[in-house]
Image (cartoon, rainbow, N blue to C red; front, top):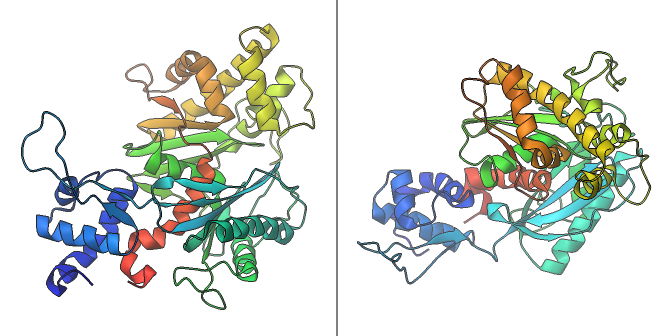
Length: 413
């Protein structure tokens, strides 16, 4: 070990906070790291060197000052581009995808979205883990964990998917247990670098929108927000999530923010939950296609078809434009209710809602302002999400969290 025992003991408790600062881009230099941690330069240097020795970050050996600045140049810090990865997986109504994700939310490798989501969850999870394991073998990278995003509330502490309404799965599927079993079957190694009983990657699972919110807060359009609300629709249905002071708010048992079942049209479409006119069925891709008078085709996912319709025909087809405005008005009504209850300082829209915001942001902002109590006094910024595959990146955040909490203990340094 290159550090003195004194510096290591002083700085070990700062390893996790330091790694999180570099991971989220908030400490681009050692000088910033020193200030953020509130430690001496020597301790910050020791901490950075230890994280570099663990293969997690890189520290430039020849620091240079920015043009026009004075004073001692500071070493630049970055996540190690060749460092370890986690296996991230996502299952949705139209298929599944696997990826390898490094620190900093970097997508190292992905397999194209594929597969049919059958009524057998273990079969589906087995296929996506098999695809991820193949990516790992091809990459030769060290794996330190695995995370799974599913379109359902996931109850804690059991890790069960309570209401996978848009999958043909029974309620209460033990997704975390099944995911972990599939990781063991494929021999996906954990932090120790070995496979086998007790040494395979730990499996984590959570709701896909919760994970998208976590990813956007750490690496995307939600970075810097204290009270971030994320609402989005992927392939079917609508979800929401709240990040408070940097932590995902999941409620007492992981079931908070089921915003898809807010009623925005009492006389609207029947919803899977038994009500009518919920956001879930009034602002998802199928609702847009229906409002525009288009029948879904088999050539691509509903989300891709809805996106393509807006991108190619919003400006030229009055029926498509009217359908988009209808969904924007319904979405704005739901967002206004959430603003009144939650008082966020920023809203990020994901999936199809992102495309709606890009097409009619002024209209959406006006609806939210008109319907919310505080809208006229100061509007809440409503922004499109900025990360590709944010649910996959969020699934990776689940798997990275033990390393962020205790890098040396987790990786066995």
